[in-house]
Each structure stands twice: as structure tokens, then as C-alpha cells.
Amino acid sequence: MSDAVAKIRKKLEEEIRTVEHELNLELPKELMKARAHGDLSENAEYKYAKERQSYLSARLGQLQKRMGNVAMLNLDNLPADRAGYGSRVCLLDLQKSAEVEYKLVTPEEADATNGLISTSSPIGKALLGR
Image 1 (cartoon, rainbow, N blue to C red):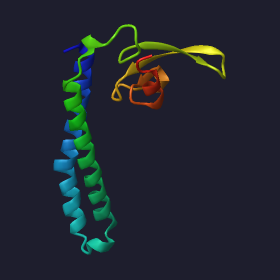
Image 2 (image 1 turned 90 degrees about the vertical axis):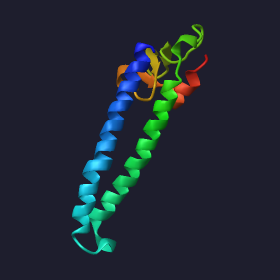
Image 3 (image 1 turned 30 degrees about the vertical axis):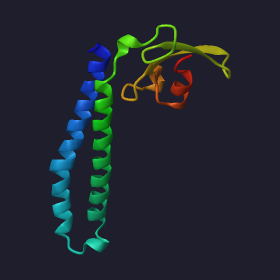
Image 4 (image 1 turned 45 degrees about the vertical axis):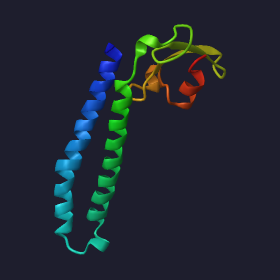
């Protein structure tokens, strides 16, 4: 496994642990506390906690799916003459008439202000394979 893949896995594992902690430990306490306030039909705390629970469950599913995809990621087979994960690309900023360099990375690593563009972003998708 490459260092890049190991870094991505570590970041995903950390986020999965954080989401699981909130979903399994913190949120049940909030729900119990909100239920204690009585009528659930007009209980904003309860509604918020249920919405948060739904969001976190969906996010956990996304993260687990992403972890499965990362496990299959093989960076050794990427063609060197095409833009793909890890490639540095130079683009021309037409407004400033200046070249801008970006690196194509996974969504977990993306940080546009530091020149790291996700391969799943619109610009990243447009650059793949070129």
C-alpha cells in the first residue's frame, strides 16, 4: 500500500471513529434528555437530535463505502502520460493571464486554497485522462 493510500485510510478511519462516537455515545444521551422534556411533537431538541442521527448514519455509510473503494485503490497502475490521482497540472487563469499549478487528489485531501483539487470535483473530472 502506498503512503498516499495509507494517509487516506488513516483520515477516513479517524472520521469514522468520530462519527461512530457521536452516533453511538453522544446522540443517545441527547435523545434521552430531549425525550424527558415531554411532548415530542413540539420538541425542537428531539427533532434536531433525530435529524442529526439521520445525517450521521448517512455519513457513516458514505465513509464506509469510501473506505472500501480506497482498499481497492492501486496507484501503481496509473499511466504517467495522463492526468490522474497525484498528477500536477498547469492551467491558465484567463482573468489574470497567469499559469496556476494544481495537484489532483482524493476528496479527503482536497484543499483548493493550497492547490489540491479533488478528482471528483468538476474541474478534477474534466482534467482526468488528459
